[in-house]
Structures are given as structure tokens and as C-alpha cells.
Length: 441
Image (cartoon, rainbow, N blue to C red; front, side):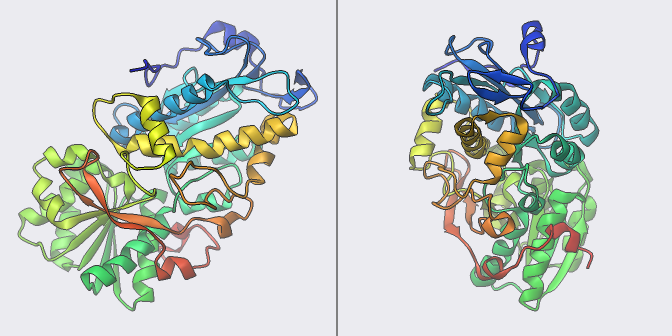
């Protein structure tokens, strides 16, 4: 197994501080081998460089790596992103025709644990900002919102570790997969067909993550002429008694859950423990963690819960991208689709960097322009052809997702029950604003 740099490694190396380009992103200020360059690009090699003759592109990572609710997802997804760029570096790095220089990519030196806290996310973003070209990861909807105005002003693009519908309107965010709003529309349409539902409840965090999915559920429920109930719930496994009480009191046919894995298990397990099992729970992608199959809620989850997923398949999928991911990671202690998501999110960043190199403009503004011009991204089969259309904004959004069911025999704890599908509500919906803005309409 290849030894990857440990998640959370983030010491600022003195030589980087001396050599990295700083925050004045004037493309005429700095140049390397005929390229315009800006912050986060050096002619000197990366620390522990794979290719000693290459320059270095520094990408930041802002993630939830310890105590936040999404650490079980964020730790493997960050490891997969390290592996993704290690593969790129081992294949010679990034270059373009006519250039005499290539670049390795470093996603370790400016990696920070923001603990899913918007204030901490903002602080650490400001700390690493002078030394990075772009963000390989910014985890969370509310946390990313906290830095988005400055990202826009500074031309810093990012791959999100989130699926907010806001990103369809944000040029600096390179999202992959259907957003929470579309995902929940598809979940409701699926449940109408598969389970004959008549009432929809959304139990959700009271932030852009939770409210985006709840709004999608509301749009689909009202489109079917069904009652819709919104139930905000706080972070914390032990804070779900009120949510469970609302499910028991209202007895909906379908509950769309948009929380962390621990909260989701507490809600599903708590509802079943009270004897109410005539209900279907469908959780957005981040609600699942395979470790839940060893929890007290396991039986309830197998019987009552399904998960919407953004990719063609999970960790053990049969595409060139899945195989490349597994080869790059080597043996992992526990299979988790955080790896799958983390890996997939890097393809658009790679495409944008390649486009900027081809244009001879490796400044922040040059990378942003290259990203905005992308009409498709090669995901090596992990998303369908045509995915990654950023040039068309909201009209380029992927509108399909899978439906997954708990499966103790699967390495990720779930298996695909419905292949990547776009259901009627999502297919017809015109995305004109972030969905969470519609929740209280």
C-alpha cells in the first residue's frame, strides 16, 4: 500500500512562505516559463515532490476532520483527494502543449480542520488564502457560505464537499452530482411510485444544507398535491427527541432526512423503538455511514431507511474512475463512500487547471475563467457523459441520482436499488434561485 500523507497534516513550511506567490493576483506581476501565475504557484518543487523538476500548485482543503458531525465522511474523502493528486503527480503532473514546465499539485500543506464551524472555516480560510491557488475542498454548505463572498472577490475556485443548489449560481464553485434540492425531488417522486405515499415530512438541519433538501421535498410534494411538513432539528445525536416526537405525532408516510449520520440513526431508530414503522425514511447522501449497521439502530435502518446517492455507483463500482481510485488508495481500513465522493469532486478542479495551463494563465482569474468555460468534464465513467457543464450555469445541472438501500453484504453498507435516474419533478423544474430560499414561501 502506498503511504499517503496523513489527513490533517498542515504545518506551514518556511520555504513555502518564502517562495509562494502572494495575494496580489496581477497576472502581469509574476511569470514562469511563459505562464502568467499568481498566488499558490511556484517554480520550486512541492515538499516531498514526486517530480523534482516540476513546479508546484498549492490547493487548500477546509474540512471536518475531527469532532464535527461529518468527520466520518470527511476523513476518507480528504484521503481520496490526496490519493487523486498523488496519481496525477505520479503520471507526470499537469502541463500543456508548448510549455517547458509541468506542475505537481500539493493538497497537504494547506489542509485545515474547520470542524464544520463557519467561524473557524472563515478564520482558517484567511490563514491559508495567501498561499493557495484554489480550494480542492470546502466542506459544508453553511461553512462555504461564510467564505463565498471573498472567494468571489478573490477569484478563488473550489470543489465543494456539499451539494447545495446555491452552487448552480456561483461561478467559483465546481459542483459535481445532483444538488440536495434535486435529490429530494427525485426521492419524493420515487417514493410515490415505490411506496404509495400521501404525506411528506422533511426533518432537517436549520441551515442551507437541511433547508435545500427540505425545499426540494416541498416542491415535489406540492406538485403531487400532498401535504408537506417541515421539521427543523439541531445538530447532536442526543437532541432528536423533538424530531422523533413530531414523526410520531404527524405519522407521515415519507420522511426526508437531511442531518448527519448520528442524528439520522437516532431519528429512525427512535421512531421504530416507539412502535411506528408504517413510514419510509429517505436520507440525503451525507446521512449515511456504514458503521451504523453495527449500531443499535441497524435493524430499523435496514427495514425503514433508504439513501439518495449522487454517483453512478459506490466504492466498488465498475468504471475506470472507480478502479483508478481503488488502485490509488490501496488497502483501506474501512470502505466508505466518502472516498468515492472525495475522488469525484477533484475531476472538475483538474479540468480547470488544465484549461488554465493551456491558456497560459495560471492566475486565480485565469483558473476561474477556464472553469467557467467548461462544458463537460471527464469523470472516467463515475458520472455520465455530459456531466460537468459549468458554462450553462443552472441549465447545466445534473438532475439524476441513485436510490440506495442498506445492505450488510456491501462494502459500503448500501447497494444501488435504482440506477442513476432523473424523475419527472426534477426533470421539469426550472432552477431560478437557490431552493432553500423557497422553503418558507
